[in-house]
Image (tube, rainbow, N blue to C red):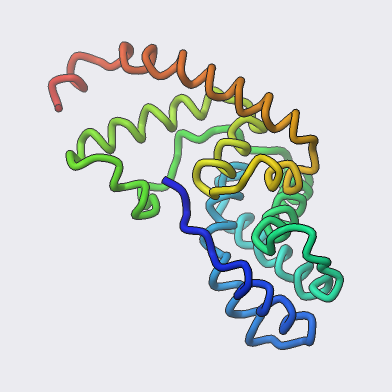
Length: 198
């Protein structure tokens, strides 16, 4: 269910080229990270035009600050942190964070569509997870997204969210407990018609 990790050496080489003002390298990095950043930012807002603006703002910062990257984290961690901070700033200026996840795009990444051999089971599981995630706090959802979809370690998540590792662990623990308790309840709430559709 995680997004395949990119080769950090390749990303670092691209970032060094960006620091040397290579626009083509920036374009390659942009294309490589655009889908990943867009998916992550969709946890803050469902407005596609705002997500696009945030991604562009993030890469403007990458263009300006690439030379200052010290390599204290993976390039992907650095980029996600920039996008997170740009995203928070933009959605706050835009009127607040959209906490509703009920309008998830039907076009999930291929690795998420392949949860099961039975398409109706996959759809049902996705629906339950979406409904369960909708009941978590934003911070809990972001931690789960970064860990299980983005493949980031606890330490990397702490860097991205600018919070202590202990806070990340606590958010992850509480999110898992809440989901473990919610998913069976959501399954029981299925209507008889929904059960017959299987």
